[in-house]
Amino acid sequence: MKKNVPFFLGSIFLMIISIFVSSLFAQTYTIDIISLPVGYGVYNMGVGLSEEINKNSKIVKAAHFEGKDPTVTMRMLISEPAKKKRTVFFSDSWAKWAGEKQIGLLKDVKYDYSKFKGLILLSVSPNVLATTNPNIKTLQDLKGKRVVLTSTRGGVVDAVLGGILKEAGILDTLRLQYLKPEEAKDALKDGLIDAAMFGISLRSLPNVFKSAPALVELTSTKETYFISIPKVYVESFARKMNCYVKSVKIPPKMMGPLQTEPVEVISKYTFWACHSELPDQVVTEVVRIVYERAHAFKNYDQMGEILSKETMAKMGLKESEIHPAALKFYKEKKVPIGELVE
Image 1 (cartoon, rainbow, N blue to C red):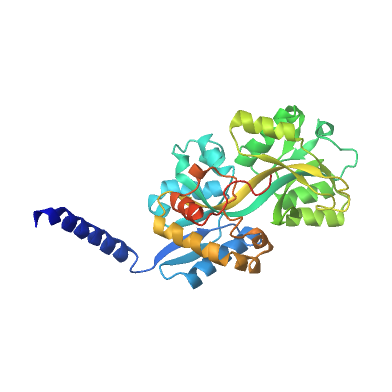
Image 2: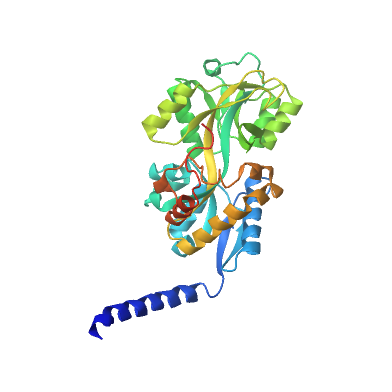
């Protein structure tokens, strides 16, 4: 009888744990999905993620909310700890770096930013320099010119794009202005600035990109040209600052009729992320649903065309940067991890 005591106690312990876990999820576990404002493809993908969870899970339910820059969400989660266990949010390759470098909204917010983890791919999102001046062909032609990099002085985009132009040796010569994309588009049309950065995103594989609305309007109403940012400057900044940023070539005609040659642009990944405190069972359920329903996301937004069982873990992240429960799922299902665009 004594020989069976350890086995008996072990069985009781496992039963207690099982009862605890079962009771934890006896009622549905509700999470918040925080995306971007209406009008962005990420917003549509957020709607899709919440709907697919609600239709296909018995243990997790989701409520979708408009969000802002991922650093805004990260700051909220740091200040409101209870939400760490209940939030999936839009993020990108630069957000965690901004926290580590104390940039923008995360300045003076001390925290272990490695606790923010990647979950599921959204897209590849480059930034491109556009001009309406046909005489501006290279970065060196921008010296002394009025240029818009972003709308927020001192923010993470300002730090990354400005840092790369510093590597090119032109940042200190620029007359920088800070405008939102719509404002920058109008300023270019009116000749008030000489060049501006606009967003584009990967919409289907292997290399079909779509411009943001402001850039689409600019190219359809004004002769627009594009300025390559040579890969050497991007890689130099990335190496010196330990920041994930890549150089990607956009094929001819992809951004406008006057784009006759490939254009080198600055690129980052966008993905769904969470805090490490989001429960493993919740993470596994969310990832499982996307894995099984990946084909359905193209019905919510064109961005969903790139999502599949083969691409969903290709966020440009190291294994240590992915939530452990998601990483376990990907390894068990043999889902490839790494880069989507080389």
